[in-house]
Figure (cartoon, rainbow, N blue to C red):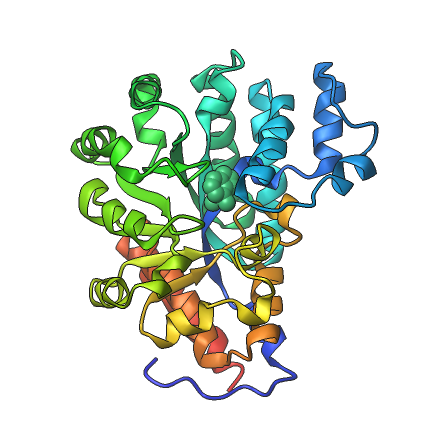
Amino acid sequence: MNSVRPVSPERLPELLRLMPKAELHIHIEGSLEPELIFALAKRNGVALPYASVDELRSAYAFTNLQSFLDIYYAGASVLLTEQDFYDMARAYFLKAAADHVVHAELFFDPQTHTARGVSMETVVRGLHRACVDAQAGQGISASLIMCFLRHLSEEEAFETLEQALPYRELIVGVGLDSGEVGNPPEKFARVFARCRELGLHLVAHAGEEGPPAYIWTALDLLKVERIDHGVQAAKDPALMQRLARDRIALTVCPLSNLKLCVFPDLAQHNLRQLLDAGLAATVNSDDPAYFGGYMNDNFTQTFAATGMQASHAWALASNSFEASFAGQADKRKNLDSLAACFETFS
Ligand code: ADE
Ligand code: ZN
């Protein structure tokens, strides 16, 4: 579609909700709702430092990334069995289907679990089974991206990669997450080089809170194909040109940025600026159970706050398919169904 016809302001939220979309930045542990945290704690006999769901939820008042990560890792401590990982991902896929997500690439943090004695096999098999059922039941194509925790060492990342090798065929790529500032991409250059040799796709969080320099090194030293977040790129005009020229997708997460105080309010979010500068930005939920919204909440609230139009909706959804690690035939099919959806709004 070369030109997108305007859609009236009243109908725009409906278009945003109904259009098919891909989610490329969801930490599956960040989809654990407080109710499920309590249910799994009970099932597994895990003690929580919160008396109730409401008390836990009221702790979700974050001031920056680290203040969130402390609670996020505590929440993940209830996950012990393959069924727990399945149930968590299953709940996410049902929410994603309701938001017309037709393709999802799930981040998972194995080191959060292996450090507690949960095996890589337990984690990967539970998540993979949920991916298979999402395809069969909801028609969502789904794959797994294993993230290395950047606050841990290079050696620990190599050990994690070793543990994952028996499940290589169940993992589409690797990523880099956790506390960004002080843990630059170059710390993991050798691990990512090895992953590249293994034929894994490469992504990394960069420029969420960290400087544009981290985006440059993620591109040039880690050789990533997408940047997760990347919103700090706007501070560096040469970097903006590089990202636009090379069509490097940014997996932007507006409600996450709001809740972690990266932007003071959604009206000041720079998603529209990134798109208007020709960058391949996408919209994603990051950790929806913690940040107050899944995919469609991210779309509708950000459009309402920034005045973006149908042409931006088209760009965001088509970028999500083009930047995905799906096969060419799936990409084509999803782009065709996106075009058909826009036709019904013209
Ligand atoms: N792990 C889960 N959510 C994250 C985020 N927004 N940034 C870095 N690491 C994360
Ligand atoms: Zn993230």
